[in-house]
Image 1 (cartoon, rainbow, N blue to C red):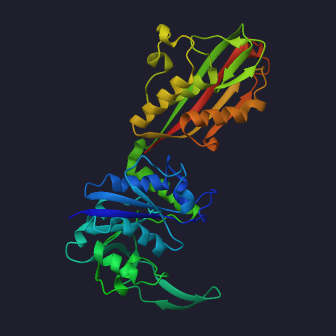
Image 2: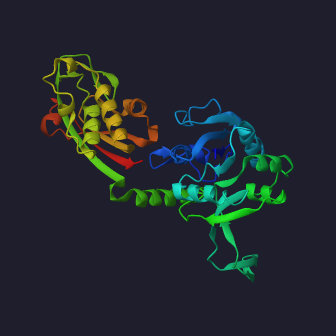
Image 3: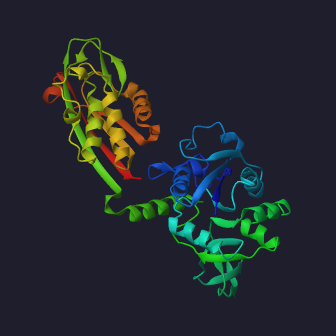
Length: 380
């Protein structure tokens, strides 16, 4: 049977902090929305995905446009947003799974169980039995207990016969807690299938931390890699130095086979190091004339792409530039912005700072510039 998915992402929830709606915040190298969409796009039974966005996000570059999905504008309530997504699918599928974008750790097994439940019922949804004791209380005082037998914590995706859930929403109240409530109001029986405690709904900042831990456990010991890089270039004739892709006026230049951006070379080597892939010289040999005078962003972009090919996203970068001159501080914000642009990161994932060697050694004598960097890679 044709199975489609409606992913509801029209909320503005900011309780999780970060200054953005939670679906657009990063979770171990990808946005919450990206992880959720990937889970459904990778499932062999899902033939079509409808992503329901807030009207303000339709033209945004935040949502992962590269993933296969129809995009529609949501409404003022969750129910209105679900109806907007269902309307796109009317007559195009037999079954639909409705999922909250804020559950990025949904597994293929949970999706399988919901679809299997629809073989015998017009509705099916995952849930986890309540195991904790339940109290009633007033003014922070326990006033009673609640019997927990037969109680469940509801999850998504919640699956339905498409035509029947569309009809149910047409006659439902706008304040329904979820689609199971809408279905039950319309007389649709909903089967309970086994949920997954890892299928958490991200609401608070603590939920982000828990989700990252769960992803690390899922990905195993290779979930995070760390690499370091170190490079040196001497001064020579010139009128500026290029550091982190930013030209800084100076009475000398840095010498090297390429543009001699010592800081960018160092970050590039740190990425290669985290991948156990050697250094720039192995990928772009200085003996090859095509790289003479080359812009260093070519090397950095290659390292970032290689990490992505191996299944890693860059978690953060920290680069220290060691020199007496020129002064780095005034240019550091521009350096961070340029490095973030090249690597596809936020500026707050890139650290650039400078120090001197207290006039000791070749940097102290003003003979050149050194740089060192550390990079973390996160398995995606």
